[in-house]
Every structure is written in C-alpha cells, then in structure tokens.
Length: 333
Image (cartoon, rainbow, N blue to C red; front, side):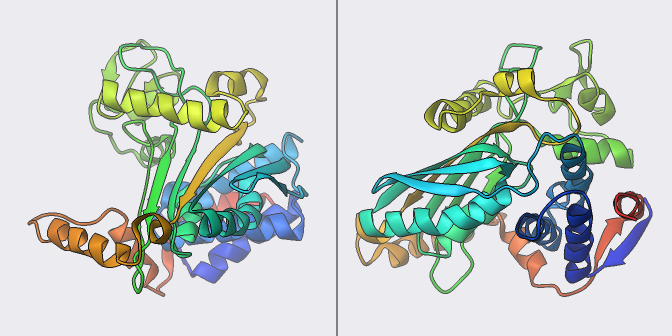
C-alpha cells in the first residue's frame, strides 16, 4: 500500500474543504473534520479519512442535510432529546454533550437520545467528552443489517458499537469503543482494500460459509457477533437502546428507507451520563484508581484505549493511504 504523510491540521483541512465543497455549511464541515482528524490522530483509521467519500456520497444524493441545525429539548431535568435536523451526528453531539453533562452533574444521572440523524463516526469522542467532565459515559448506535444474530446466516443487527468511558482526574480517561460484531465493518473493508485476511469467525461468505476473505464478507456476505450468543445479546440490547428507547429506526427499518448511496443510514444514538461523585461520594476516584492499579499490575494487561491515547501524543505526520487522499481530492477539485 502506497502512503502519503499528512499532519493532523492537513488531514483536518482536507476533510473540511471537501465537505464544504459538497454541501456542508461551515459548522457541520468543521464538526465532521474535527471528528475525522482526531480519529486519524488516534490511529482509528476506519473512522478517519476513510469515511469522507461516504459523507460526500450522501451529500450528493440529497439524503443528508449538510446545513443541519441540531436542536436540543429538555424533556425532563434528566432527559435530553436532540433533533439532528436530518444531518450528520458530530454537530448534534457537539451541541448536546454539554447539555447532557450539565443535567447529570446536577441530578447524578441523565440520558440523551439523538434522533433524525446519520452516524458515521467513532463513538469514543462523545463518551470521552463526558469523562473529561467527571462523568461516566455510555453511548451506542445502530446501522443497517450487516451482522447475523447467533445461529442465523442472514443479517438483522448493525455492527452496533458500544462505547464506555470512566473519568480519571489528572490523567486521560479509560475509554473503550467496540463493535458488537467480531470486527467492525470499516476494518473489514480496509482489510479487503489492502489485501489482508481476517480471523476465522469474523463473518460468512455469500453462501453462508465461514471465510477469512474480507472481500467475501463485505460484498454479499455477513458479519458475525463477537463471542457467539453473548455478543449477539449485547447487539440486541444496543438495538433496543438506540432505536426502541430513543424512538428511532431499528437497523432493519433503516435499511428499508436508505438509498444505499454508500453513506450512513438514518437512525438514532443513545447516551447515558452518570456522576460517580454524586453516587459514590468524594472518594470515588481514589477507590477506582486502586482497582486500576490491581488490574494493570497483572502481567500482560493494558487498559482499553491506552494505545489510542498514546498515539495522540505524537505530533508526527500520519501515513495515509495515497489512493484515498487522491480520491478525496478529486471530490472537490
């Protein structure tokens, strides 16, 4: 694979310029470009520039409102409803997280449902933003059917990612962000692009047979949940939280109305914010740090998200797939 080196500001500007040219206003382009560039900064390649052609496809098809003006409504003191105005999620999150955090810091726990939106990014930015405010964060969203429930060969669930963040005063939060499929769809697509195999158990080919060929999984095949029936149950829970609880589309419903332009499907997101200071009392942080000390004291253990946080400390240019960069440039030149 040929690569080109780009600094984080160059990555941000590449994404922002492309989005502005294809129908986003300044606020939406900036929010998405920040999401894209921070993903590249942290080594989350499947949610960085790799997503930009999909954003552009859904702008050009007219499916997504690039000038969306998300609006929040406080339904109760602990329930926030964010209407995304048929736009992408980053701007809705940018506006909604402070409102959600304020509610949780006052009451101890609060939830936000994001509706009428298109999620095409990682989930860790929103949960980490809550943790940086001293709150425990939980977020999940769905997609279109790409994952077969345990025992099935046909998809019903999305990859249904789940993110969790725990605040650690004085240091970076504990954050994980994982698909409930054995591998995220974007990672499978990148493996197919780069000619790499994936582990057995990742998915099935179009005939329903186990395969290590990512192209067969991504093109007519199906992903499998991680951990068999356990991962399948968590994927089901995600569907119920971000669709049933929020009042948005389940993955199978999203597929029925999507135009399959290559961009994200419409749906919702569920976020939960909790205050350990209110619930556990003033010693909550020291108590948790004792647990982390025990955990990391075990040989071979590394906290989830640690590699990503280490990546962001580097100011060096990032190697980006050269073909991808050229493709993005053709979308606005």
